[in-house]
Length: 333
Figure 1 (cartoon, one colour):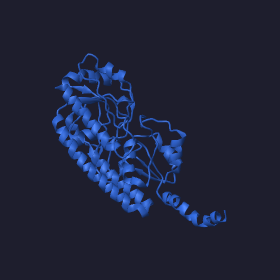
Figure 2: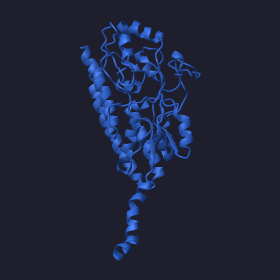
Figure 3: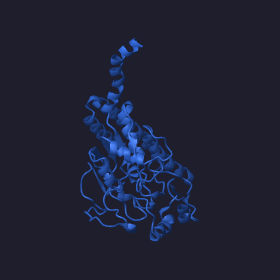
Figure 4: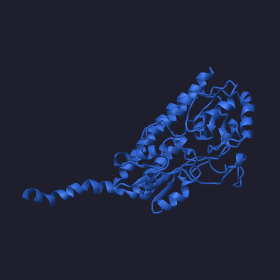
């Protein structure tokens, strides 16, 4: 017994070392699964970020659980897409994570931002008229003029920037750098690891972009409608523009006028498929396209709802979107 007691002063520092090392790694909170995937890739073996909006939930409106609020309250840094995606989170984040470093990824340097598209159906040339780089600039409409912030179609505010920027992998590469920079500032002892992981991930995304460009070259000209207007960053990057969207960018219910516009233009636009989303009512898709001959069984989503959390979620999500377009092209043959 005496020998065991005498060893305690020697063992205590050894037992504390792992805990002390772990405490130096920042506590991280993130908003959605794709951002969680990018942050986890940068953190590597050093730690795992806490997810505030659980898989399967819409980020446009969400009631946090106590454990998710606690993750915000304990965070040293919060990474989120933008207040445009999660307006409900702004006040909660500011009150619960007031002392944390806060990184709005759509404002990160190198981010390409696109304005919301207007109307239920889109013209392909719109893609060239509403972009802005570096996460800064005016809110511009399709005519290139600065627009006032006012309620858009269906009485929702859809001026300003479309927040679904993670669906462009070039934006994700910029975000990897922003994530690594923030973590390195908070945890300088591991700065080289964060930067190395980010650089590796950027290279992996280069390979993914090449892979998807090659695959989607064969699907150009496919005409499809998406459930809600969340995919234009992916569409633009890979030149596979949607013909329209049933719902607005915030996934709010479409007005009767919007539904009539889509129904009237399905044949004119040569629409081949409409994509459902797992979070939203499939009956709406069936009712809008009943009797048109448009394929309505295909499912995509912008968040990777059915994918396991982790570093592979982000590339798997982009491959899922490419799979959806490819399936639509095959169904149309």
